Length: 173
Image: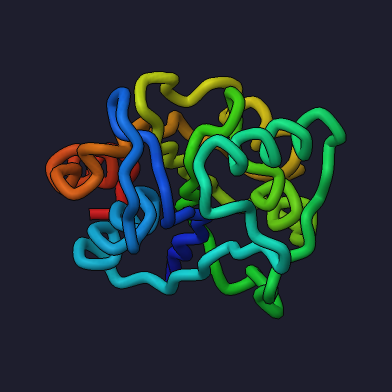
């Protein structure tokens, strides 16, 4: 039986919303992951850094930029034992400097994605998917990477229809 996993990186604290900073208790990508979980029967895994980025937005983006420039692989707080039971992985993340956060690379490089399908979901405030789809292909060897869904982070709570349409187009509902 085909099984789906939603693996996501999300950051709460101070975030950027259409030109202004705002403190949030739940990150945008996690909000969309919750909507997805309502729509399909799936397991979820939150990708969390052992040493998280600063809660201050401007400091966070500087830290994320440095990690990207250094091609860092931040240690995570935990890992799945295996992804063998999953056929499809919905991979959610915010757009950090034109791609996914380096913690997502840590996650992707830990597992064998041969024969798996990855559906990328990227929250952003106008930068879209960036190079994340091609970067996933490089990091998740053997995976089939489908066209992703870009969701404006400040509209994450209103993304149910877009997620439904994307899931339907990819055979998940």
